[in-house]
Image (cartoon, rainbow, N blue to C red; front, side):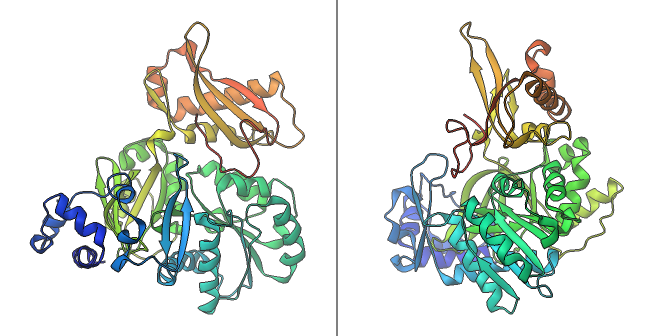
Length: 452
Protein backbone atom coordinates (compact mmCIF):
# COMPACT_ATOMS: atom_id res chain seq x y z
CA UNK A 1 0.00 0.00 0.00
CA UNK A 2 1.01 3.63 -0.37
CA UNK A 3 1.25 4.91 3.22
CA UNK A 4 1.37 8.53 2.08
CA UNK A 5 -1.83 8.15 0.05
CA UNK A 6 -3.55 6.54 3.05
CA UNK A 7 -2.36 9.37 5.29
CA UNK A 8 -3.73 12.05 2.95
CA UNK A 9 -7.10 10.27 2.68
CA UNK A 10 -7.43 9.80 6.44
CA UNK A 11 -6.31 13.35 7.25
CA UNK A 12 -8.94 14.71 4.87
CA UNK A 13 -11.87 12.45 5.75
CA UNK A 14 -11.58 11.32 9.41
CA UNK A 15 -12.56 14.15 11.80
CA UNK A 16 -10.72 12.77 14.84
CA UNK A 17 -7.47 12.32 12.91
CA UNK A 18 -7.57 15.89 11.66
CA UNK A 19 -7.95 17.08 15.26
CA UNK A 20 -5.14 14.75 16.37
CA UNK A 21 -2.76 16.19 13.79
CA UNK A 22 -3.67 19.77 14.77
CA UNK A 23 -3.01 18.98 18.44
CA UNK A 24 0.46 17.77 17.49
CA UNK A 25 1.20 20.71 15.20
CA UNK A 26 1.24 18.62 12.03
CA UNK A 27 0.26 20.28 8.73
CA UNK A 28 -0.92 17.44 6.44
CA UNK A 29 0.22 19.40 3.40
CA UNK A 30 3.82 19.25 4.63
CA UNK A 31 3.88 15.44 4.81
CA UNK A 32 5.22 14.60 1.35
CA UNK A 33 7.95 11.96 1.85
CA UNK A 34 8.33 8.70 3.73
CA UNK A 35 10.75 10.49 6.05
CA UNK A 36 7.92 12.90 6.89
CA UNK A 37 5.57 9.95 7.37
CA UNK A 38 7.99 8.24 9.78
CA UNK A 39 7.91 11.35 11.99
CA UNK A 40 4.12 11.37 12.34
CA UNK A 41 2.95 10.87 15.95
CA UNK A 42 1.91 7.34 16.81
CA UNK A 43 -1.73 6.53 17.40
CA UNK A 44 -2.57 4.61 20.58
CA UNK A 45 -5.78 3.38 22.12
CA UNK A 46 -5.60 5.79 25.06
CA UNK A 47 -4.09 8.72 23.20
CA UNK A 48 -6.42 8.59 20.20
CA UNK A 49 -9.21 6.03 20.10
CA UNK A 50 -10.52 6.55 23.62
CA UNK A 51 -10.48 10.34 23.34
CA UNK A 52 -12.99 10.72 20.52
CA UNK A 53 -16.63 9.74 19.95
CA UNK A 54 -16.90 6.66 17.75
CA UNK A 55 -18.37 8.41 14.66
CA UNK A 56 -15.51 10.93 14.52
CA UNK A 57 -13.00 8.05 14.26
CA UNK A 58 -14.66 6.84 11.05
CA UNK A 59 -14.49 8.15 7.49
CA UNK A 60 -16.72 11.19 7.03
CA UNK A 61 -17.93 10.68 10.60
CA UNK A 62 -20.09 7.68 9.58
CA UNK A 63 -20.00 4.37 11.48
CA UNK A 64 -19.77 1.24 9.30
CA UNK A 65 -22.47 -1.37 8.80
CA UNK A 66 -21.36 -3.67 11.64
CA UNK A 67 -19.71 -3.27 15.05
CA UNK A 68 -17.55 -5.84 16.81
CA UNK A 69 -16.59 -5.63 20.48
CA UNK A 70 -13.39 -6.54 22.27
CA UNK A 71 -12.57 -6.31 25.95
CA UNK A 72 -8.79 -6.57 25.63
CA UNK A 73 -6.71 -7.01 28.76
CA UNK A 74 -8.60 -4.41 30.81
CA UNK A 75 -12.12 -5.78 30.48
CA UNK A 76 -13.41 -2.40 29.24
CA UNK A 77 -15.30 -2.82 25.93
CA UNK A 78 -13.83 -1.33 22.76
CA UNK A 79 -15.97 -0.92 19.66
CA UNK A 80 -14.68 -1.64 16.16
CA UNK A 81 -16.83 -0.70 13.17
CA UNK A 82 -16.59 -3.05 10.19
CA UNK A 83 -17.84 -3.04 6.63
CA UNK A 84 -18.23 -5.55 3.83
CA UNK A 85 -15.17 -4.06 2.12
CA UNK A 86 -13.10 -4.81 5.26
CA UNK A 87 -14.29 -8.41 5.13
CA UNK A 88 -13.36 -8.81 1.47
CA UNK A 89 -9.78 -7.66 2.06
CA UNK A 90 -9.33 -9.91 5.09
CA UNK A 91 -11.01 -12.85 3.37
CA UNK A 92 -7.92 -12.97 1.16
CA UNK A 93 -5.85 -14.02 4.18
CA UNK A 94 -8.28 -16.88 4.81
CA UNK A 95 -8.20 -17.70 1.09
CA UNK A 96 -4.43 -18.03 1.12
CA UNK A 97 -4.62 -20.58 3.94
CA UNK A 98 -7.55 -22.53 2.50
CA UNK A 99 -6.07 -22.56 -1.02
CA UNK A 100 -2.34 -23.08 -0.44
CA UNK A 101 -2.35 -25.19 2.73
CA UNK A 102 -5.71 -26.99 2.63
CA UNK A 103 -6.24 -27.33 -1.16
CA UNK A 104 -9.81 -26.17 -0.62
CA UNK A 105 -10.29 -25.34 -4.32
CA UNK A 106 -10.41 -29.06 -5.02
CA UNK A 107 -11.87 -30.39 -1.77
CA UNK A 108 -15.40 -30.11 -0.48
CA UNK A 109 -14.78 -28.39 2.86
CA UNK A 110 -16.80 -28.04 6.05
CA UNK A 111 -15.60 -24.94 7.95
CA UNK A 112 -16.56 -25.06 11.64
CA UNK A 113 -16.37 -21.67 13.36
CA UNK A 114 -15.38 -22.30 16.99
CA UNK A 115 -14.74 -18.69 18.01
CA UNK A 116 -17.28 -17.09 20.34
CA UNK A 117 -20.33 -15.74 18.54
CA UNK A 118 -22.26 -12.58 19.37
CA UNK A 119 -20.70 -9.13 19.56
CA UNK A 120 -17.15 -10.47 20.03
CA UNK A 121 -14.61 -9.91 17.32
CA UNK A 122 -13.73 -13.43 16.20
CA UNK A 123 -16.81 -15.49 15.45
CA UNK A 124 -19.07 -13.51 13.15
CA UNK A 125 -16.12 -11.99 11.29
CA UNK A 126 -14.64 -15.44 10.63
CA UNK A 127 -18.06 -16.65 9.51
CA UNK A 128 -18.35 -13.75 7.06
CA UNK A 129 -14.86 -14.29 5.64
CA UNK A 130 -15.50 -17.99 5.06
CA UNK A 131 -18.72 -17.16 3.22
CA UNK A 132 -16.79 -14.74 1.02
CA UNK A 133 -14.64 -17.70 -0.03
CA UNK A 134 -17.76 -19.61 -0.98
CA UNK A 135 -18.79 -16.61 -3.10
CA UNK A 136 -15.40 -16.80 -4.82
CA UNK A 137 -16.15 -20.32 -5.97
CA UNK A 138 -14.64 -22.42 -3.20
CA UNK A 139 -16.75 -25.50 -2.35
CA UNK A 140 -17.00 -24.44 1.30
CA UNK A 141 -19.93 -24.89 3.65
CA UNK A 142 -19.85 -23.08 6.98
CA UNK A 143 -21.42 -24.09 10.29
CA UNK A 144 -21.02 -21.87 13.34
CA UNK A 145 -21.54 -23.59 16.70
CA UNK A 146 -19.26 -20.98 18.28
CA UNK A 147 -17.39 -21.93 21.43
CA UNK A 148 -20.13 -24.29 22.61
CA UNK A 149 -18.13 -27.50 22.85
CA UNK A 150 -21.18 -29.74 23.20
CA UNK A 151 -22.70 -28.30 20.04
CA UNK A 152 -19.43 -28.67 18.15
CA UNK A 153 -19.19 -32.33 19.12
CA UNK A 154 -22.84 -32.83 18.22
CA UNK A 155 -22.82 -31.37 14.71
CA UNK A 156 -19.45 -32.54 13.41
CA UNK A 157 -20.13 -36.33 13.42
CA UNK A 158 -23.37 -35.72 11.51
CA UNK A 159 -21.96 -33.30 8.94
CA UNK A 160 -18.34 -34.38 8.45
CA UNK A 161 -19.06 -37.56 6.41
CA UNK A 162 -20.53 -35.38 3.63
CA UNK A 163 -17.23 -33.53 3.03
CA UNK A 164 -13.66 -34.20 1.94
CA UNK A 165 -12.19 -32.30 4.89
CA UNK A 166 -13.19 -30.46 8.06
CA UNK A 167 -11.56 -27.18 9.10
CA UNK A 168 -11.90 -26.07 12.74
CA UNK A 169 -11.32 -22.35 13.36
CA UNK A 170 -10.75 -21.11 16.93
CA UNK A 171 -8.34 -20.23 19.73
CA UNK A 172 -5.52 -22.80 20.17
CA UNK A 173 -6.35 -24.02 23.71
CA UNK A 174 -10.03 -24.32 22.88
CA UNK A 175 -9.36 -26.30 19.70
CA UNK A 176 -7.14 -28.65 21.69
CA UNK A 177 -10.01 -29.13 24.15
CA UNK A 178 -12.23 -30.11 21.22
CA UNK A 179 -9.65 -32.49 19.76
CA UNK A 180 -9.10 -34.06 23.19
CA UNK A 181 -12.77 -35.10 23.21
CA UNK A 182 -11.62 -38.09 21.17
CA UNK A 183 -13.88 -38.15 18.12
CA UNK A 184 -12.52 -40.13 15.11
CA UNK A 185 -10.81 -37.03 13.70
CA UNK A 186 -8.48 -38.87 11.32
CA UNK A 187 -11.52 -40.25 9.48
CA UNK A 188 -12.59 -36.70 8.54
CA UNK A 189 -9.30 -35.19 7.29
CA UNK A 190 -9.23 -32.41 9.88
CA UNK A 191 -7.38 -29.08 9.52
CA UNK A 192 -7.07 -26.22 12.04
CA UNK A 193 -6.99 -22.43 11.73
CA UNK A 194 -5.98 -20.68 14.95
CA UNK A 195 -5.69 -17.09 16.12
CA UNK A 196 -5.30 -15.11 19.29
CA UNK A 197 -2.10 -16.40 20.87
CA UNK A 198 1.33 -17.84 20.26
CA UNK A 199 1.73 -21.61 20.37
CA UNK A 200 4.85 -23.77 20.21
CA UNK A 201 5.89 -26.20 17.51
CA UNK A 202 5.57 -28.91 20.14
CA UNK A 203 1.90 -27.90 20.41
CA UNK A 204 1.48 -28.10 16.65
CA UNK A 205 3.02 -31.58 16.54
CA UNK A 206 1.03 -32.82 19.55
CA UNK A 207 -2.34 -31.59 18.28
CA UNK A 208 -1.61 -32.79 14.75
CA UNK A 209 -0.96 -36.25 16.15
CA UNK A 210 -4.15 -36.24 18.23
CA UNK A 211 -6.21 -35.01 15.26
CA UNK A 212 -4.70 -37.41 12.73
CA UNK A 213 -3.16 -34.56 10.72
CA UNK A 214 -0.42 -36.20 8.67
CA UNK A 215 1.29 -32.97 7.59
CA UNK A 216 1.47 -30.37 10.39
CA UNK A 217 3.08 -27.84 8.02
CA UNK A 218 -0.03 -27.71 5.85
CA UNK A 219 -2.61 -28.93 8.34
CA UNK A 220 -2.46 -26.19 11.01
CA UNK A 221 -2.23 -22.48 10.20
CA UNK A 222 -2.22 -19.50 12.53
CA UNK A 223 -3.56 -16.04 11.73
CA UNK A 224 -2.14 -12.85 13.24
CA UNK A 225 -5.34 -10.99 13.96
CA UNK A 226 -6.30 -8.03 16.09
CA UNK A 227 -9.58 -6.55 17.19
CA UNK A 228 -8.33 -3.21 15.89
CA UNK A 229 -7.89 -4.19 12.24
CA UNK A 230 -8.86 -7.80 11.62
CA UNK A 231 -6.30 -10.22 10.21
CA UNK A 232 -2.92 -8.65 9.49
CA UNK A 233 -1.01 -11.72 8.32
CA UNK A 234 -1.16 -15.50 8.09
CA UNK A 235 1.09 -18.50 8.36
CA UNK A 236 2.13 -20.04 5.07
CA UNK A 237 3.77 -23.44 4.51
CA UNK A 238 7.05 -21.54 4.14
CA UNK A 239 6.71 -19.63 7.41
CA UNK A 240 5.75 -22.84 9.24
CA UNK A 241 8.76 -24.71 7.82
CA UNK A 242 11.03 -21.88 8.95
CA UNK A 243 9.51 -21.84 12.42
CA UNK A 244 9.84 -25.60 12.80
CA UNK A 245 13.50 -25.35 11.81
CA UNK A 246 14.14 -22.60 14.38
CA UNK A 247 12.22 -24.42 17.14
CA UNK A 248 15.15 -26.75 17.68
CA UNK A 249 17.76 -24.02 17.39
CA UNK A 250 17.26 -21.40 20.12
CA UNK A 251 20.56 -19.75 19.21
CA UNK A 252 19.49 -19.13 15.62
CA UNK A 253 16.07 -17.93 16.81
CA UNK A 254 17.75 -15.45 19.13
CA UNK A 255 19.96 -14.17 16.31
CA UNK A 256 16.96 -13.62 14.04
CA UNK A 257 14.32 -12.44 16.51
CA UNK A 258 16.42 -11.10 19.39
CA UNK A 259 15.04 -13.75 21.77
CA UNK A 260 15.31 -17.52 21.94
CA UNK A 261 11.56 -18.00 22.46
CA UNK A 262 9.60 -18.50 19.26
CA UNK A 263 7.17 -15.83 18.11
CA UNK A 264 4.29 -16.36 15.75
CA UNK A 265 5.81 -15.99 12.27
CA UNK A 266 3.51 -14.97 9.42
CA UNK A 267 3.69 -13.31 6.03
CA UNK A 268 1.68 -10.22 5.21
CA UNK A 269 0.53 -8.42 2.09
CA UNK A 270 2.29 -5.02 1.82
CA UNK A 271 -0.37 -3.93 -0.67
CA UNK A 272 -2.93 -3.67 2.15
CA UNK A 273 -0.89 -3.34 5.37
CA UNK A 274 2.16 -1.22 6.15
CA UNK A 275 4.26 -2.35 9.13
CA UNK A 276 7.00 -0.53 11.02
CA UNK A 277 9.14 -1.43 14.02
CA UNK A 278 9.23 0.87 17.04
CA UNK A 279 11.46 0.04 20.01
CA UNK A 280 10.87 -3.69 19.72
CA UNK A 281 7.14 -3.36 19.09
CA UNK A 282 4.95 -3.19 16.00
CA UNK A 283 3.28 -0.22 14.36
CA UNK A 284 0.94 -0.65 11.41
CA UNK A 285 -1.15 1.41 9.02
CA UNK A 286 -4.23 0.21 7.22
CA UNK A 287 -7.66 1.14 5.96
CA UNK A 288 -10.33 -0.30 8.25
CA UNK A 289 -13.72 0.65 9.70
CA UNK A 290 -11.57 2.98 11.81
CA UNK A 291 -8.68 3.93 9.49
CA UNK A 292 -5.36 3.79 11.33
CA UNK A 293 -2.14 5.59 10.44
CA UNK A 294 0.96 4.53 12.39
CA UNK A 295 -1.07 2.73 15.03
CA UNK A 296 1.03 1.42 17.92
CA UNK A 297 -0.62 -1.85 18.81
CA UNK A 298 2.07 -2.63 21.44
CA UNK A 299 2.61 -6.20 20.26
CA UNK A 300 6.25 -7.15 20.78
CA UNK A 301 7.78 -8.18 17.48
CA UNK A 302 9.40 -7.04 14.26
CA UNK A 303 9.69 -7.35 10.48
CA UNK A 304 11.96 -9.52 8.33
CA UNK A 305 12.05 -8.72 4.59
CA UNK A 306 11.70 -11.78 2.35
CA UNK A 307 15.22 -11.68 0.88
CA UNK A 308 16.80 -11.10 4.28
CA UNK A 309 14.98 -14.18 5.61
CA UNK A 310 16.28 -16.34 2.77
CA UNK A 311 19.84 -15.08 3.29
CA UNK A 312 19.63 -15.87 7.00
CA UNK A 313 18.34 -19.39 6.34
CA UNK A 314 21.08 -19.95 3.77
CA UNK A 315 23.68 -18.93 6.35
CA UNK A 316 22.14 -21.53 8.69
CA UNK A 317 22.36 -24.20 5.98
CA UNK A 318 18.58 -24.56 5.66
CA UNK A 319 16.70 -24.59 2.37
CA UNK A 320 12.92 -24.83 2.85
CA UNK A 321 10.99 -27.07 0.48
CA UNK A 322 7.84 -24.92 0.56
CA UNK A 323 7.36 -21.89 -1.63
CA UNK A 324 5.21 -18.82 -1.08
CA UNK A 325 4.69 -15.35 -2.51
CA UNK A 326 7.77 -13.15 -1.98
CA UNK A 327 6.13 -11.24 0.83
CA UNK A 328 7.77 -9.89 3.98
CA UNK A 329 7.50 -11.66 7.32
CA UNK A 330 6.24 -10.18 10.57
CA UNK A 331 6.90 -11.89 13.89
CA UNK A 332 4.85 -11.39 17.03
CA UNK A 333 5.66 -12.37 20.61
CA UNK A 334 2.48 -10.86 22.06
CA UNK A 335 2.00 -8.30 24.80
CA UNK A 336 4.78 -7.90 27.34
CA UNK A 337 2.35 -7.69 30.28
CA UNK A 338 1.54 -11.38 29.82
CA UNK A 339 4.91 -12.29 31.33
CA UNK A 340 5.79 -12.93 34.97
CA UNK A 341 8.92 -11.34 36.40
CA UNK A 342 10.78 -13.72 38.74
CA UNK A 343 14.17 -12.79 40.23
CA UNK A 344 14.52 -10.27 37.43
CA UNK A 345 13.93 -12.86 34.71
CA UNK A 346 10.94 -12.62 32.40
CA UNK A 347 9.08 -15.94 32.32
CA UNK A 348 6.96 -16.24 29.21
CA UNK A 349 3.86 -18.38 28.77
CA UNK A 350 5.54 -20.10 25.82
CA UNK A 351 8.24 -21.45 28.14
CA UNK A 352 5.62 -23.14 30.33
CA UNK A 353 3.53 -24.40 27.41
CA UNK A 354 6.39 -26.36 25.90
CA UNK A 355 6.97 -28.09 29.23
CA UNK A 356 3.34 -29.27 29.24
CA UNK A 357 3.59 -30.53 25.67
CA UNK A 358 6.33 -33.08 26.31
CA UNK A 359 5.43 -36.78 25.90
CA UNK A 360 5.84 -37.59 29.60
CA UNK A 361 3.01 -35.26 30.65
CA UNK A 362 0.94 -34.26 27.60
CA UNK A 363 -1.58 -37.07 28.14
CA UNK A 364 -2.19 -35.92 31.73
CA UNK A 365 -2.86 -32.20 31.22
CA UNK A 366 -4.95 -30.11 28.84
CA UNK A 367 -2.19 -27.56 28.24
CA UNK A 368 -3.98 -24.75 30.07
CA UNK A 369 -2.20 -23.15 33.01
CA UNK A 370 -1.91 -19.94 35.03
CA UNK A 371 1.49 -18.72 36.17
CA UNK A 372 2.08 -16.37 39.06
CA UNK A 373 4.94 -15.16 41.25
CA UNK A 374 3.36 -15.88 44.63
CA UNK A 375 4.69 -14.45 47.91
CA UNK A 376 4.55 -16.72 50.95
CA UNK A 377 4.23 -15.81 54.65
CA UNK A 378 7.98 -15.24 54.84
CA UNK A 379 7.74 -12.82 51.89
CA UNK A 380 9.69 -15.20 49.67
CA UNK A 381 8.49 -15.35 46.07
CA UNK A 382 7.87 -18.62 44.26
CA UNK A 383 7.12 -19.26 40.61
CA UNK A 384 3.75 -20.99 40.86
CA UNK A 385 2.03 -22.73 37.95
CA UNK A 386 -1.58 -23.89 38.27
CA UNK A 387 -2.24 -26.61 35.68
CA UNK A 388 -5.53 -28.05 34.37
CA UNK A 389 -5.78 -31.83 34.25
CA UNK A 390 -7.30 -33.91 31.47
CA UNK A 391 -10.82 -35.30 31.95
CA UNK A 392 -10.84 -38.03 34.58
CA UNK A 393 -7.40 -37.18 35.96
CA UNK A 394 -7.09 -36.40 39.68
CA UNK A 395 -4.38 -34.34 41.38
CA UNK A 396 -1.50 -36.45 42.67
CA UNK A 397 2.01 -35.87 43.94
CA UNK A 398 3.45 -37.98 41.13
CA UNK A 399 1.71 -35.96 38.42
CA UNK A 400 2.80 -32.72 40.07
CA UNK A 401 6.39 -33.99 40.15
CA UNK A 402 6.36 -34.98 36.48
CA UNK A 403 4.81 -31.67 35.43
CA UNK A 404 7.26 -29.65 37.51
CA UNK A 405 10.29 -31.49 36.14
CA UNK A 406 9.11 -31.10 32.56
CA UNK A 407 8.45 -27.37 32.94
CA UNK A 408 11.80 -26.76 34.63
CA UNK A 409 13.72 -28.64 31.94
CA UNK A 410 12.22 -26.48 29.21
CA UNK A 411 12.66 -23.26 31.19
CA UNK A 412 16.36 -23.97 31.56
CA UNK A 413 16.68 -24.97 27.89
CA UNK A 414 14.82 -22.04 26.40
CA UNK A 415 15.17 -19.15 28.82
CA UNK A 416 18.82 -18.29 29.43
CA UNK A 417 17.75 -15.30 31.55
CA UNK A 418 15.88 -17.64 33.90
CA UNK A 419 18.85 -20.01 34.12
CA UNK A 420 21.25 -17.15 34.89
CA UNK A 421 19.16 -14.96 37.20
CA UNK A 422 17.17 -17.37 39.34
CA UNK A 423 19.07 -19.10 42.18
CA UNK A 424 19.20 -22.84 41.63
CA UNK A 425 17.31 -23.50 44.87
CA UNK A 426 14.42 -21.31 43.59
CA UNK A 427 14.23 -22.55 40.00
CA UNK A 428 11.84 -25.48 40.44
CA UNK A 429 8.29 -24.19 39.98
CA UNK A 430 5.60 -24.93 42.55
CA UNK A 431 2.85 -26.91 40.79
CA UNK A 432 -0.83 -26.77 41.69
CA UNK A 433 -3.10 -29.20 39.88
CA UNK A 434 -6.78 -28.50 39.23
CA UNK A 435 -9.43 -30.73 37.72
CA UNK A 436 -10.92 -29.93 34.33
CA UNK A 437 -13.02 -26.74 34.27
CA UNK A 438 -11.97 -25.54 37.73
CA UNK A 439 -14.20 -22.45 38.23
CA UNK A 440 -11.46 -20.32 39.81
CA UNK A 441 -8.70 -20.91 37.28
CA UNK A 442 -10.25 -22.58 34.23
CA UNK A 443 -13.92 -21.53 33.92
CA UNK A 444 -15.54 -23.12 30.86
CA UNK A 445 -16.37 -20.76 27.99
CA UNK A 446 -14.10 -17.89 29.04
CA UNK A 447 -11.08 -16.79 27.01
CA UNK A 448 -8.17 -18.14 29.00
CA UNK A 449 -5.57 -15.90 30.67
CA UNK A 450 -2.15 -17.45 31.33
CA UNK A 451 -0.93 -14.98 33.96
CA UNK A 452 -2.18 -13.34 37.13
